[in-house]
Length: 450
Image (tube, rainbow, N blue to C red; front, side, top):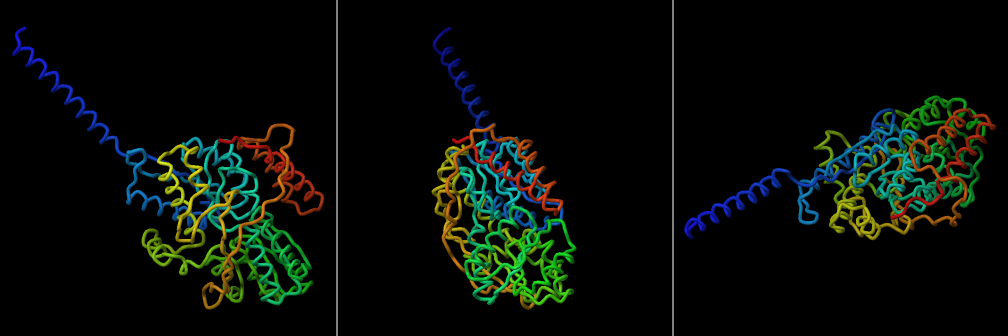
């Protein structure tokens, strides 16, 4: 082969190389951005579905806005996708959902909504090293388990209960208080904190009653409450029960101030309570939406996208995603081991307020706002800011059998507790407490760290 022929051959070979490289570049462009899945779980069916869908909408709005803004990780464009699951506000279902989200390879989970679902699911996530940011679970036990994967973006029930109990005694001038809770981790946990605060402020809890999160008839309970003539009646539970309870308080002629936690601080409560709603009080972690930085604009964007008003926790679900996205950006990675340290040290201005976490994953200096239902709406009365809850004394890890790390194991313990709780007899309550104690003892075993 002469020189010109060799030159021609080299030129042809080079052309093929350039063409192949071009094909690869086109293939890469056609493949599109890297997909990052964000998990979410809340009750999307049943009596609390309106709240769960509110959370889901907040998550979806944040994801859509993050995608519109554009982002790169490691020099590659990324796109966020939502994987949302219905936990039905059921602790057993929550652990199954947690495993399903792990199998979907999400980078983190925003949820769950209820404390009773968040706490058992948190063990499943912690064992897998999966990050979890709850926008609404307020029971302090969630972050007291020692899991480096657990965070929350609103104040907890130690803070909320302290404000509620103190307000009842000091501002409502209550000397006697009745307390009813729905026996969920949220309702009972908040009621316990309210009782502590009432007694610390010099008030007296004259009766403590229990119901469940499916009930709508409270006549027998309220009749017993009426016999004690309390100045204030506090209910720890959700709006699906609080609304009918308010109606029955009015129909029975009970002269008392009705006080609720964040689970009842909704427009749905007002709809269910009807003419019994005015004069009721509630608390909600955070500040009123209209007082949030950018809160009014958020409300307008939310309504424009979903043709619905904010129910309750949507701003916090929105901020939970934004905090996660910022941590991913700072880590420049989708690896949980690199994201977790960034999340733990983050300083972020959310619409709900400044977001940073203490060593347990609790929101630092969370605010609590008290509201009174007036002319067709909840009107803010006062906002209290405070420190995050104190940690309990650390308990040594048990040397017994291994802790349950699967949804099936955790669910089995919850089954025993739930079955016993369904019967109000004293013996069954003891059985329930024993079952819960056994579950808590197992949960104290150290989860897999990373």
